[in-house]
Image (tube, rainbow over all chains, first blue to last red; front, side, top):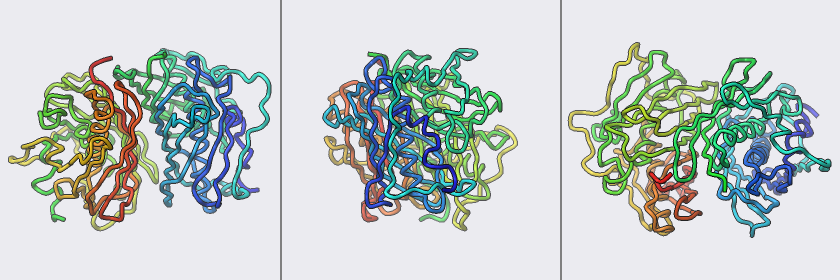
Amino acid sequence: MTGPGPDAARSVTDFVRAGLTEVEPAGSGRLVGRAPVAPHLRSAGGGMRTGALLTAVDFAGGFAGGLAALPEGWVVTTSLHARLLDVVHTGPLRLEAEVARAGRTSVVTPVTVHDEGAADAVVARAIVTSAVLVPAGGPPRWDRPARIEPAPAPDGLPDLDTWLGARRGPDGTTEIALEDRLRNPWGILHGGVVAMLVDTATERTTGGITTDVVLHYLAPNRTGPVRAAVRPVAVRSDGTVCRTEVSDTAADRVTAIAVTTSAPSR
Amino acid sequence: MPEVYPPAHHVLRDLRLAFAAGADGRSRRVWLPVTPEVRTDGGRGPVRMGAIAVLVDVLGGGLAATAAAPDWIATADLTVHLGDLRTPGAHVEARGRVRRKGRTTVVMEVDLLAADETPLGLATMTFAVLPRRDANPVMPPAAADDTVTTMALAESGLAESLTAAAGIRVVDAATGRSEVAVTDWVRNSMGALQGGIVATLAECATEAAARHRTGAPLVVTDLHVTYLGFGRVGPVRTEVTTAGDGDRVVAEVSVRDHGADERLMARVSAVATRVGES
């Protein structure tokens, strides 16, 4: 094994209970993921919390992109665009990721999310864009076709906000401490956790449910606390459009920007 | 392909855009005059998403090219989220700045403002940094002041709607199937369909399909465009799937170059909503 192992950063993906299977033949650029709508991930409205859904999407799209970058490199997510078509989910959810373009420096992977418990309805569509890099120590190695199963579920997982440790920051912001369990294989805050933070901060600001996210990762969060500041920009018939800025407060650096739409809670 | 870009008769001239570069080389302002030709519904509706997309694309492209110099850039994605653009005043202003300049990408953020500086929406863009080729234009250095310039000539201007001038045609409203030819009026500096016009085509396709689905006067308020390849041959065509009801329709649009073996040029996710009913 070289580079970060396949089990690195499992605490985040285990929390969202997602598993992934590469579609044969290996190298097809396709994989299928499954995630139950577990009680600890449900919103008050009955669906999977958008932040958890985004983490599963990032996991599926990023992993498909990483496999497409092998053997020369691996990937980091640079942007995540997601649109929810329904915020009420029965589950389990099935994530279908298929690489649309694999270039020398970037990989683009659309991800479609189906609700298998609701006649396989499409409940979200997303695009994950990743940058190809060569990690120190080399890219990870995988037995192909690659497969990741979540660890057995422990009893009594906390709800998302509790697990995230989300708390009020100054001036109406939301912040989290950068605990080791929230880091990715490269030691920085997991991209899925950034998405969870953006969603949580948006919901706290608007009182609604995040239905649309454009998230650009600009720089790594290394130290923390990591803070999200949300500014409502426009109110429309389908919700409130917000701008969110994420920063690593210790480094006084903006690490991500996001545009979200938050629909009124039903 | 004309030798001078843009040619005398071109969308970037006829929209009569005005530009002011920030002295730091990392920010820029561009103004789009609001005329009936850039509105929906025969000039009676809000400012068209496609016109805003062209505005954002030209702002972002110029700024990213300056940031990436001496290398060149290609648009990777463009997102726009709009509020109520029924009464923006005499112009819409796009105020953009570089948020990240890396070895392989440039990320841009754009605020959209009414003439009275009321926020109208937000846009983002990502550009891939590419090795410079001989055919790429040389970007002038950033101006040292806020001098306002324009590509418009004395005779520039739209004599018909933006979509009509671009030659966009809705072939089948039920399915949103639409098309546009790749003419000099809508080519970019690389000879391909300009990114904002790709967005305008997707907007028209979404609007037609959403209105047919619901019977409601929905307009496109969100657009996520992921560019996957150039459209050099044409006609460029759309395929649309929709979901939703009379208040919000979500569309997925595939944009293909029919003349280049149906090559997939872009994937677009769009939302059409009722404007002015919050």
